[in-house]
Amino acid sequence: MLFLKPRWQAGKSKPWLVLALLALIFLIPVPANSGPNTMLWGVNIHDGGSDPKLLADKLAERNFRSVRMDLWGNDPRYLARFRNAVTALKAKGIAVQATFFVSFSHGQKRNQDVGADLKEVEQSAYKQTLTQINATKDLVRDYELQNETSLYPNICITNFSGQKAGDFDTPEGRLQAASLRGMSKAINEVRISSRLPLRIILGTVGRHWGFLTFMQQQGVLFDVVGYHIYPHLKHPPLDQNPWFGPGGSLGQLARFNKPVTINEFNAGEIYNGTTNGANRHPGPSYLNKVGDDVTEDGFKSLDKHLKEIVNQNAANVESVLFYEIWDEPRKAPPENRFGLFYDSALQQPKISLLIATSLAGGNLSPAEKNELTARGMGLPAARGVDTRRK
Image 1 (cartoon, rainbow, N blue to C red):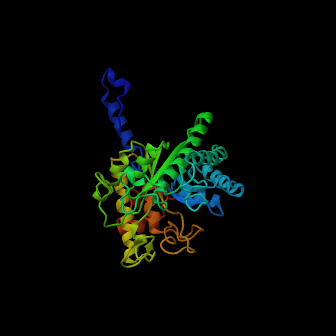
Image 2: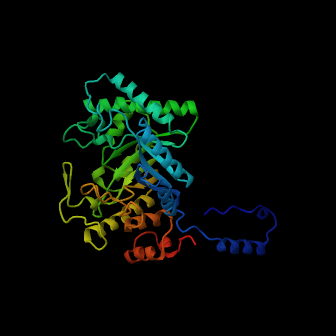
Image 3: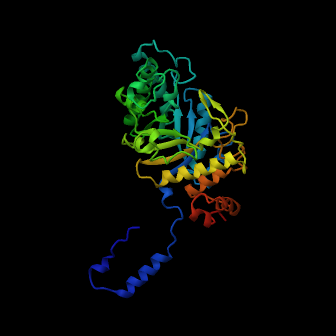
């Protein structure tokens, strides 16, 4: 805390006034979580669900002030739902990161069109982007160029780590660079013409730092680095783990001299017992229930690595967004169990939600605080103060 010198101290000393001032200072309540609250906390919500107002109310109660959601802004029906959801969120002071897509994005018809004329690719992506941004610029400030592009099929040279720019100098890498370049130029043009403080997020995963470098070299514009990571309890601290390179993942992110949003985060244990693409996660399965050893390790992992992010000074991490808001039972493991809530009605919170709420400075019931206290998780100040609205 910074104490400013009172004007009267420049002249004659008044000891009684000094004592009165000090007494007043110690009576002023200090926010329990003043450190972590300088960071935005939030969650991935996809399309906002069937009741955006309820969702906004629940997120505001937990002091989640940022969400990440999909935008298909050239689909009129989707755009209407998107605007409805964002309006409800904005009314509660919750900002949106809009992750948007074009015809070159994963799963779309031209995703592997590596023989295309790259000037045409850039222009097509530019035009598809321009309409989406103009349709939402009154509500959204942060736009993310696609999702996990560095994991697209054939984009990285086989058996390379993705740490070097040359690892992405492939036909698919150049195709995506042309598309992302067009997307980023469209946002920049709207930013200039509208004089709105729009920002461009370009994301990466794992240790694919070379993806960011390659895209910079290819003229892709971005203001914020997005990052996805799902660490296990056994993993070293995020600002030390040598697997990512010197300074760990946070040290590597800092090299780009841009703000960082960790806009997908959860416990790596959620993957245990599954096969995710080419990656196998052996050992006992994550059962997604309190008391299960692997699940409890996941809670410990979340608590451990979140505190590392809060306490580190390597990277300018401006926000952490959890993946995701609720479980999706219709999907196969592990995609069915990443939620902070067990249910889409938002009535069954997980321990992971309580940990996140503690760090965000949101409301915790007495029973929820007891759950954290019993595990020694969350922030002690938050565990000891009833923040539930009366």
